[in-house]
Length: 333
Ligand code: SF4
Ligand code: MG
Image (cartoon, rainbow, N blue to C red; front, side, top):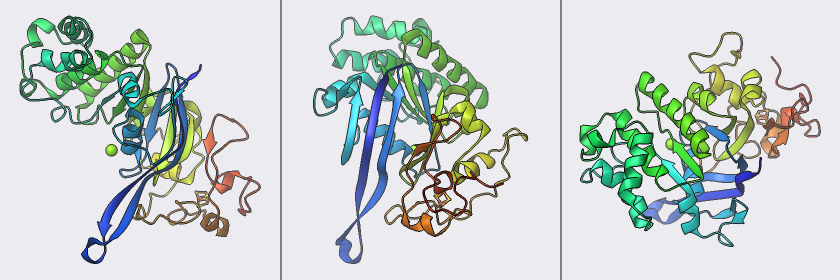
C-alpha cells in the first residue's frame, strides 16, 4: 500500500529558560531526526518511556506543534507546499487520553460531536453527529443532550472518537486514548477502533505506554528513545526478536509477556538522560550493557536486519561496518 503519511528528518526543540537570571536558552531536544511512514489502512504503534517524544511526534503530525525541520508528506503532498496546515488538520484528527478535559463541559454531547463539522461548514452537522454517535455505540436519543460530566470515561472517549470521525479524517492519531480506561472498557474501545478502521478505511497512529495494547491494535511498532527512532518493525517480528537493547529492556519490563518470549534483559538502570544535552553517538549508550567505544562516537543509522529488511534498527550491534566488537552477531544472550 501507498504511504498515507511520511515524515522525514522531523525535528522539534523546545526552548526553555535556565541559568542565571534565565538568560541562557537551553533547548529540549524533544524530537530529533525522526523518519517513518504509515501506509494506507495500517496502524502504526509508537512506544517508549514518557518524555521520549511520542506525544510531540503526534502533535507534529496533526500540525498542533510546528516543526523546526523535516518534511511531512500527507497523501503525496508536502506540508508547506501543496498541502496547507488547514488541509493537514482536516485530514488528520487526534484523540487524546484525558477524555474529560478535552470536552467542553458546557456543550452537550451532540454539540461537541457536531462542533468541528459546523466550523468546517459541512451540511447537516447535527444529523452527521447523531450518525457518528450511533456508530460509536452511543444512542443519540439517550446521549445527545447530556453533558460530559454525566458520562463514564469510556462513554466520553466514544464521544471523542465520534467527534474525530465527524470530520471525515483519513488518519487518526490516538495518544494514550485508552490508557485511562478500565481493562474491560479498554477492550471494548479497542474493538470499536478496529471496526471503525475497517469500515471507514482509516489509518491510525496509536501511541501508548502499554505494549500489550499496542500489540493488539498495531500492524507495526515504532520504538522511540530520547527523541529518536531506535527500532521499527512488524508486530510479529519485534515480538519474536527485539533487536535494539533498549527495546529488549522495554519488553522485558512487561508484566504479562509470554515467558517463552521474555528476554532475560535486566531492567533499565536509572532515569533517561537529560534531553537538553543528550549523550553523544548512540543516545542509549549511557544505559546500554553492550556499549563499546564506537557507540559513544558514531550515531547508529536505522537499517534493515539481514533476516528481515522490514525490521529496522539503529544499533551498531547490527552493523558489521560499525567497528563494534560484537557487530554481526546480533544482541548476545
Ligand atoms: Fe547499545 Fe551501542 Fe547499540 Fe547503542 S549502538 S544500543 S550503545 S550497542
Ligand atoms: Mg505522552
